[in-house]
Every structure is written in C-alpha cells, then in structure tokens.
Amino acid sequence: MNDRPIGVFDSGVGGLTVFRALCAALPDEPMVYLGDTARVPYGTRSPSTVERYSMEAQDFLNQHRIKLLVVACNSASSVALDSLVRESDVPVVGVIAPGARRAVEQTRSGVIGVIGTRATVASGAYERAIQALRSDARVESRACPLFVPLAEEGWTDNDVARATAETYLGELREAGVDTLVMGCTHYPLLREVIGATMGAGVELVDSAEAVADEVRGLLADEAAPPLPAGASARRDLFITDEPAPFMRMAERILGPEATRIEQVRLDEY
Ligand code: DGL
Image 1 (cartoon, rainbow, N blue to C red):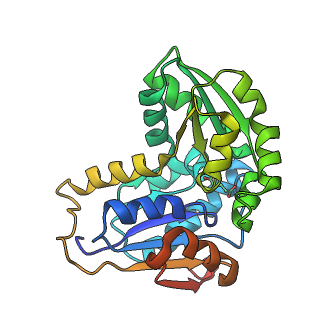
Image 2: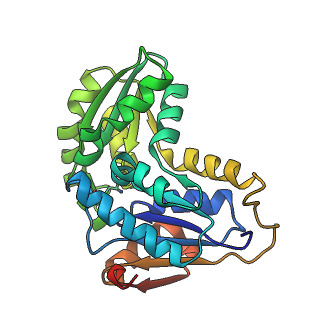
C-alpha cells in the first residue's frame, strides 16, 4: 500500500492546481494524474454524464493501484462524489468540503461568494457544505463557464480575461462578499484577474491547499502511511486528447514536476 500512488483526476488542466499543491505538500509520494482533455468541459454537462465520466476516470486510476483518490474537479465532486466513494476501496477526497471549510474560517462578515461551473453552481453543493458549518452564512453563487476555456487556452491575464471577469464578478462585488471561493480548479489560473476584479478587501479561497492538508492527514493514518523522505516520487500524467496544448500549460503550472505525459483512451479500461 505504502508505495502505491495517489490518483488525481480532473476534466483538463485545472486539476493541476491541486496536483501542484499535493506535490508540494507530499514531495515523496508517487502520484498519477488523469486529465480527461478529450471531454473537457465537464461543467456544462448533465449530472449523469459527469458521473459517468468520473466513474471512468476512477476505473482508469484504479488500474494504477492507487492508494487514495483525489477528485480535483469541483463539477465531479459536486455531483459524483457519493458514487465514487461507494465504488472505491480506497479513501476518496473531493474539493468541495475542504474549500467550504477554508471559506468559513476566512470570512468575517459571513457573506461568501462562490464561483464555479454551471454543474457545480446548479448542484448547490457549496451552499450545503458552507451552511452545514455556519448556518447564518449567506452564499452568493455565480456560474462562470467561460473561465474554463480561457484557462485551457492560457488566456489568463489579457483584456478578454479582464472583461470576462468584470462581467461575471461585478454583481458579486456589489453584493458585498468578503470571501470568494474559486469553486473550479481551473480558476486559480486566473487568480490575478479575479483578485483585481474583486478588489483587495476580498479573500480568495483556492481549495488546493486545503485538499493537500486533508490528504496529508489521511496518509498519516495507519492504513496508508506516507513514504519515508527521500524516496523517489513518480509523477505520471495521462490525458485523453493530444498532449501538445496540455503540455504547454502543464509545464507552466508544474515546472519540472511534469515528468511524463501520455495520451490514453478511457474506453480501454
Ligand atoms: N476543473 C473543473 C472543475 O473544477 C471545471 C472544468 C470543467 O468544466 O470541466 O469544476
């Protein structure tokens, strides 16, 4: 169990923001990443489709004999987490609960903004998770679907990104949120534009670090102890479409951690 990898999946490059935090927090752990780039985005699809795609990603990662599954996609965590947990022999960590916890820790006014894909916002998963922790919190949600193609395209800091952010976020800013959950793993790639649009008084929550803390805690359990320091860590990246555009972003996000990238077909698993 000990030397088995941690499995991580997302619809595309966004989950690499979580993968990067995991690599930083657990430098000696082998990890396998799957980006389902042939079918990105998940967030505009129906819950049953997102659930089916997520189960296929899980099957693929199980072939790699993972010891823990990280669902590095808010859309999948919102609508498929229960099914993934049911089907899994290993612990499953989603991104919603850690992000909600961090938002509740950070907010002073109790007015929390959540931005995500249509699937995530429609599911109401963040509202439920936040209000379970703080029942008087007010949650203002907004779907920002165009942020995903902007991030996939690497258009993270140009006029188009700024105009898109202003259009999506203006109302949230006016609603007086003091904390904004970037409830999509692609959005931290636009962090600067989102932060500048919301203004200095608004704290941005990126669940990546909260997820990494949770995974570290789980590995501290006897069932799956962390590897001893100094073990050589494998970082295998798999995607379902051509590698070129993904590689460009992966190198930008991960730097030297992007050691091996291979294209695979999920229907073969
Ligand atoms: N990274 C996914 C998420 O966190 C969004 C991208 C998509 O729509 O597939 O929700």
